[in-house]
Structure formats: structure tokens, C-alpha cells
Image (cartoon, rainbow, N blue to C red; front, side, top):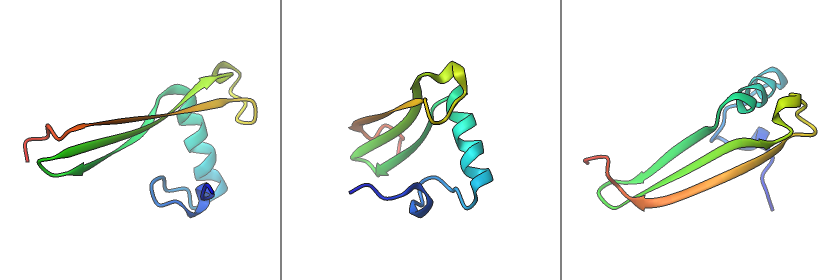
Length: 76
């Protein structure tokens, strides 16, 4: 079961206004987080708008979650 965005620490949305700002940002650019196991692995989670983005309608918009896994190349 998916956890509601309000209870997820990966994206800080403590209010309706912050949630709206995140949705507006997703219309223009991807938002992501990098996770590392130092010296071993990296994981990139990227959320981006891919459908109906030009309408700026958060109800009609479709979002894509891109997950990338690879070796840690951060130098640590």
C-alpha cells in the first residue's frame, strides 16, 4: 500500500501550500533524491510530470517515477 504524501519524509509537504508548490515545480522540472551505500551502490528516485503537464492541472497531470540503480561513483 502506498503511503500518503503527507506522511512521507522524502518530500517535505507540511501544508497544502507546500504541496501545491511541489506540484507546480513538477510541471517545470523533475524532483529527485539520491541515496547511497558509500563505496557500493547509488539509487536515484526521480519524479517528473509526463502527461498533461502543459495544462498545469494537477488533477489531470500524470507523473512518472524513474528509479536508477548503479555503482556509487561519488568518490567516497
